[in-house]
Structures are given as C-alpha cells and as structure tokens.
Length: 445
Image 1 (cartoon, rainbow, N blue to C red):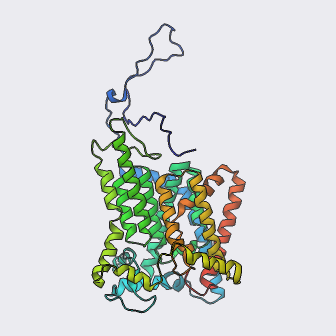
Image 2 (cartoon, rainbow, N blue to C red):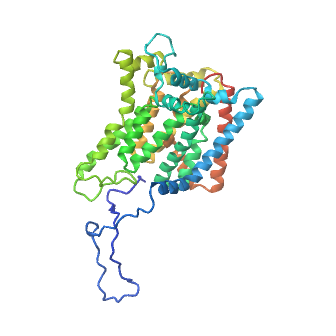
Image 3 (cartoon, helix red, strand yellow):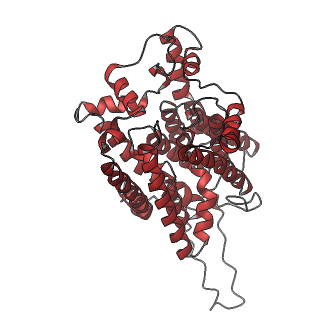
C-alpha cells in the first residue's frame, strides 16, 4: 500500500472548526431538515490555542518519544558495558578507544591546529578530507571543557545519538505509528557497528541532522529541511545524498503544486500539506536552495585554499576515495567470499553491505516516501561505488536508518514475544561485534 492518502481521497486540510452543531439524527423526526454542511472556505476562523508554547509542545513530543529513547539507551548502555568489561580484561584504555583513537584524533587535531593549506603527495595524510562541522563544535566546546582530551567530541557524539534516535523515532512514528518508531530507534542502536555512535566520530551528528531533515520534508517544513541538510553537508561527504533528497523532493513538490494550482490543498507525502504558502511557495523554494549549500561551500572553500578548482577531489584521491561504479567493491567481496579466509570483522562488513542492498529492495517494494528512497539509494551508490578502503563501509551506512523500516514495521506487526526476542538477539550481537571491532580488529572501525 502506498504511504499517505490516495490521489482520489479528498483531504480536509483546514484547521478551522465549524460552530454549527449537527442535530442528533438518532432522535430527530424523519421529516426534519438535513444538517447544513458548511464548506471549509466559509467556516468561521477560530483563534489557535496559544496557551501552550513551544516548550510545552517539545515536552509533549519528548514524552511521546520517551519509550524509543529509553530503548535506545538500554541497548547502547549494554553494548558499552560489554565493551568496557572486555577492554578491562585486555588492559586497554576505554577512554582512549572511545574518545581519542583513529578518526577521533583527526578531528581533535583539526579543532586544535586547523586545516592544511597545501595538497602534498602523502597518502592518507591530508586533513582536508574531513568536513568541518564536528571540529568546529569541538573547538567551541573546548573553551568550556578543555580537559580531558576528547571529552567534547565524545559528548557531542553521545548527545547527538539521542537526538538521532528521537528523529528516527519521529520518522517511524509518522509513517507507521509509535510502536514502529520505537523499534526503528532500537534497531538503529543495535546495528553491528553501533558502538561508533558513542565514539568521537561524526556518525551520530550526521544521522541526527539526516533524521530531522527527512522528518521536516515529510511534514512540509522546507526551510528546516534545507537548513538541516546544509549542516549535514558540512559534516560528512555523504551529505550530498541528503541534499539531493531534499532538493529533488522540493522541486517535484513545486512542480506538482503548479500543476494542481487552484485546488484547496495538495499533500505530497503523508503528513505534508503544501497549501499554506499562498500563490508562490517561497518556503519550498528556499528549502531547495539551502539544502546543497553546506556541501558546496566546503568543496569550494577547499578549492580556494589549495588554489585549484578540483582541490577537494584531489584530496580525496590521495585517500583513494574515487568512484568506480562498484568494481572495486565487487572484487573485494569476491576475494573475501571465494578466495581468502576473511577476518570476522570483514565478514561482518560484507554481510552488512549485502543486507543493506536487500533492505533497499524491500523499501522500494514497500513504496517508501520519495525522500527516504532517494537518500538511501544515493548513500548506497556512494558507499558501494567507491574504490576506497573497504572496512569502514558498514560505519558509512549507519545514517541509512530508513533501510531498517521494513524490519521495524514487520516486528511491530509481530507478537510482543517475537519482537522482544529479536531485539535482545540484536543487542547481544551488536555488543559482541562492537567489542570485536575495537579490541580484536587491528584497524579503524
């Protein structure tokens, strides 16, 4: 079944109420006149209730999302507890691994010393490959909390992980109901590499921006959608996928609004009503223009800094991040599955990539809303089509939470005992792989 109402279903987009009370037809005489139906355009306006402001609405929304946030906190705390006990048996530093290792250190050094001003020739060494929003937040927070090193980056990641879980719940709740939203947030926290969500990496920040941007699109808040997509474009290279999803959806909405000009209202996706902007949809147009600004601004800034128009792409080439249409990915998968005896972590990465493709096919079959399909489709295209390093690709797909919607919706329809069993198994598996990722796998996550 498609999401939202069918085109033939009349939609009452009015927020006004009629003061005419229909008579009680159960006791009225059969000869009584039928109730007068007041057209929406002639119904008297009723002043909105302003006794409850934004803080009250936010508190109400937070209470509504609290089961999802509690479920997410439970699975992540369990994962971190298992990791901490495991690290203690191996005499490894938990704080260093979560807050200062691998990419965490890159972001901390950018926040401390800034970006390189030359391209150079050294492989995997130019910090211009890392986008600036996370280091800027670390630098701003370090003014307040200078020590210990990595505290701000880790705090940003953990805090944004809860914002991400809230946004993920909001999308699932909007499309399928509260139960699905709770399960969707818990599933996102139970992914095999979910421990990264509580490391000083950018995945939590990027997912939070992505989730709320997609929710803003689904509910017709175009300026919010464009602004959040612009910030996501300053966070990770795959922000271009979110920008494309927002801008393309907004452009299609503008086109369809123009075709249906003169109607009382037009609903493009479930929950979106695009009739409130008058004759010219300024907000939709602004959302279209804002969405790609973050990604484009950073790419242009790198080009100016290196004094060459392709400066950013030259930096990515030094990191072997070039797009080859997936040839390198297929070769690596073939070697791992048919030639070599792969390490456990690489096997998990391969299984995650293949499962993501299968889930995307299910998402298309379920006719998910267009912005979700565009984002996850482009994200998969970028991640699988690159010939860069193979092992972090499961982490790169963490923001693709809409891929989990078919699973969450199926669990929501299942019996409670089945759903609980699946979620417990997912949490245990995530904890095991999280510990293996940082303690047994001798490389970055």
